[in-house]
Image (cartoon, rainbow, N blue to C red):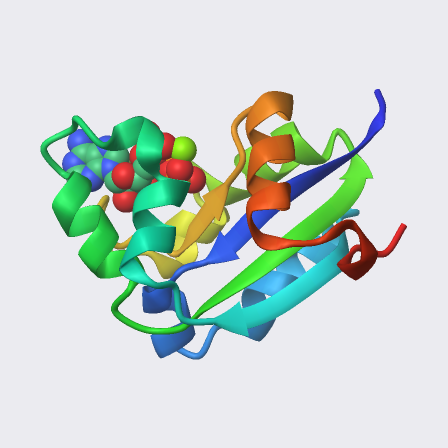
Length: 140
Ligand code: ATP
Ligand code: MG
């Protein structure tokens, strides 16, 4: 067990549905603290850079178009085992396979529009946090 930081994105579909607060409440109720937060529109270059690991996949173009389709909320979450805890709270990538009570089960419609992003490892978390935030913007 260790205190970690992870990057979360509340994706455009969830912002459009007006469930930003409900998603933040889920994090807070489960021991994750907001350590940094901003709402922004991703540029195409930002979305492509952020999801660069998927650039050879067939869904990459649609994923980028979706991520720039409206504003997102970008967050650093901090807490015990924050990386795995956030992934558990999110639920499976495909909301049809997500456990009841997870964010994707409650708020997502499809694998293409699945409400939230979460870093999947310590290496990804470090890269993704630095992608969006300067050290001085993150509360300890
Ligand atoms: P994220 O990285 O957004 O947190 P994830 O880690 O659960 O999601 P990844 O495998 O990293 O899933 O895929 C990144 C995103 O690409 C997914 O959130 C999803 O929107 C999209 N995606 C992944 N697999 C597919 C697929 N088979 N068909 C369509 N879209 C997909
Ligand atoms: Mg991923």
